[in-house]
Image (tube, rainbow, N blue to C red; front, side, top):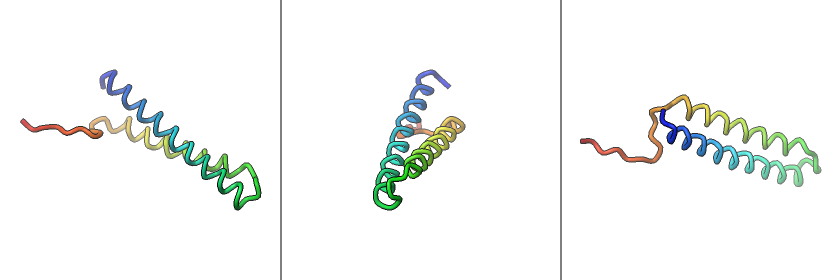
Length: 76
């Protein structure tokens, strides 16, 4: 695997992690304020779920090196 491909995979993984952790944290805030009387565990639970999903996606991305992400390959 070339350095540029490895860099692209790391960029995708970090961007995915930021989005998933942020979404889980945001949902945790909403549920904490509306349903669970301002407890902190929904924040930790949502962030942990986001981190776990991001880790799983990154692990799959690094173990499947022959998948093409959004590129068209022309046959010759």
